[in-house]
Amino acid sequence: MSNVIVMTHPLIKHKITMLRDERTGTNEFRKLTDEIAMLMGYEALSDLKTREVEIKTPIEDTVQPLLDGKKPAIVPILRAGLGMVGGLLALLPSAKVGHIGMCRDEKTHKPHTYYCKLPTFIEERLVLVVDPMLATGGSLIDAVNEIKSRGGKTIKCMCIIASPEGVSAFTEAHPDVQLYIGAVDRCLNENAYICPGLGDAGDRIFGTK
Image (tube, rainbow, N blue to C red):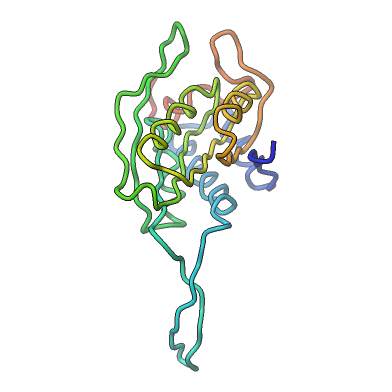
């Protein structure tokens, strides 16, 4: 699948292993999520467009590149996606931030959208949708549907851990969207949790049960 990019950097692999460990507490889990998002973002943003501008260094006049066009939009899927925003804003401090709120029906495992607020001129921006876990794929599929319905055209998605089932479902629904993944795990269990996974990312980021 040409639109799926699985991270191979040793630092990302190392930090994901630490993230999985049940002994990793809330504070460290947040920091690791932030760091992984920044490392993955470096790769996902490698094709940002630039333009040439004239500047003056202490030595001489020169022409150098700056980012071009509307500032990218970072759109976390609430609530766990919030844990990845800080790392991306470290790379793109002037990025706009939207939010998509979704909750999962514990019986059907289907997502339900309860909130969507996107930056203006979304059709002119690169939209980076972030969610630590890609399980069934339903939430990410619906989030991209929401963005497309509001005019979004250039969309990339970032997930730290994914299931093969979720990857397959997402790429079938959105073959035009690049999907960046930290690690693809073995499978989903009967409760639609990723195995071996890391548990509930939202609970571990926010210290809830």
